[in-house]
Image (tube, rainbow, N blue to C red; front, top):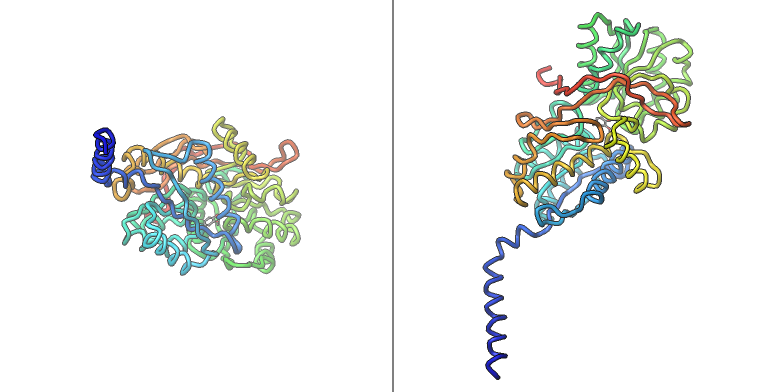
Length: 392
Ligand code: VNL
């Protein structure tokens, strides 16, 4: 072998030795795995799909590499069943070795995953589950969605100033519904209103007719409603079929009932419905207009709702945290998620560094027709609302 070739071989050998000593550094350039636990089948599938599309859109627009690490999704369908959500999160942490968990369409799903995040010391981004207490279920939870008390107090303030003196409340009978009922009543009665009756309806496949008949018999000025995303169309049909609109009973609620994914299918019965909420596809900011346009383009013309925004902002929080930690995960990543503030398509938001919960504007909106389509048109705002449910 001539001397040149020998040197060449030596150089290769030396190169191998050098690169193997660099292995720990290489581990940080390994992909960041994001385990999304989502309901993609069953009655809450529309929410899972909105979150997934929102998360994908953020990376499509801003690039899927942060601090030199490629961001990859591991996505599993929990079918809306807490035991499945827990098992899937466990598999993701133990087998797939995900760096971050996220998703959780329903409160009971987030609660089921909480111990897995805590035991695995895995930061977990809550993108839907809106019961106040969810954030306390794991110190590794960071919430980018909303809380029901946040979204209930806006319309509780608005109603008594607008001729609504007494209401019947009608909510889904589980965490977020009870939060909505309690926080609405507290604020509404503090402003001189009266809650005549509090009705709770089953979460799954509710038949609203008997409950709506009860509302009709009470003859309140309005009915205040919380129902999770995806259920509103069914409710609106029965509201009209029972003649509540004709009987002069107004409909108010949190924006979950007139969510953008299904609002257009509701027809005239939705016109004039007043809700308070943190997001409307009609929010008139350049960020939101660009977001809505890009979302529609990537999803066959479908409108984003508040769940898509949470998926989108969840990735924003992750990407910026990764940049801040130079790609480190675990506790460092969690700490870098806390305290972020930025302009979301919904408006200015902050992840409170102490509570890990979202602080955001709550808008008062009325359903109106614009260019032939129904929208929640914002006409008032409560700024930078912290979750009023804590300590309730
Ligand atoms: C929850 C809250 C789910 C609000 C929702 O839609 C919603 C929850 C699926 O905490 O379970 O709009």
